[in-house]
Every structure is written in structure tokens, then in C-alpha cells.
Length: 187
Image (cartoon, rainbow, N blue to C red):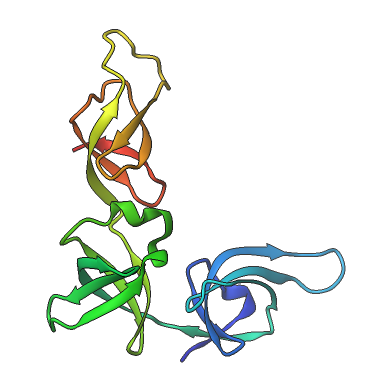
């Protein structure tokens, strides 16, 4: 596996550190007045979710791990586990519900997501960036209400609350960005 210098770590990199696999969440490059520069890196353990703050000097070498990304189709949820299937090999893999965090409601039946593997171990899952949802409840459309930045609350068919523009009405299909959990556009 390739070794990289401490100052080459970027958010999203997966590193082998302290006998574990860690994802770099936040990276701050610090140049103190005295002493050498270093990278202050917030790491999240891919196996148990614990967090760690580490300093890496530019001379420090760390193992960068490449995770294999495979498209998997969501089948069902059972006993706190999400079951996915590889569309090519029909192999099934189970991941804990917590892996998606607060984005879990956006996972729909039959949806294809990206699961990241380290050798044969499934470590992470990523939803598509944009998901189409139906507005179940919102205030009625008011004619002439075109204030530049006025948004109103709406509840989606998956129970998630988002802010939508005033022209979006009830029972309309909208596209939601799953990374920011915000309204993106009309479907």
C-alpha cells in the first residue's frame, strides 16, 4: 500500500493508523511560529465509529488504504441490519443501520448505493447524492409570495423535514440533496 507524508492527508482519505482503519474527516494545516508545520487531522474509525485527533508532521509517513467501491442494491432491513446485494455476483452483505446515520430515511427499496470494501469487509455505504421524495405536508402555495429567500417547512414521505421554496405544494415530487439534507429542485 502507498505511504504518504503527513501533509498530504486530505478529508476522505482512508488511513491505516494504530492498527485500525481510519477515515480523515477534517484536516487543518497548522504553521506555528516556532517549530515545524503539521496537519491536525480528525479521524473516524471505520469499524467502530470512534473519533481521534492526531497531529501528523510532514516527515511522518502513513499508510493510505484504497477501498474498493461496489454498487449494491438495497433489499431489506432486518434486526437493525441493512441487507444489500451485488447486482453482478448476487452476493449479499449486511451493514448496521447506524452506518447511514441521519440519512437512513432516504434509503428506498431497490435503491443502488455504493458500498466500500476493504478486502472482503464492508466498511462504509454512500447514498446517491440526490434522491426524489414526495412532499406529504406543507403550507399551501400563496400567490404573489416571491420574497428572495423565503422558505417554508415541508414533511416528506419518509418523515424527514426540509425547507422548500414557497412555490412547492403538497403531493409534489422534489429532489433532495442527501449530503446537505436540503431541497435541490423539483423532480
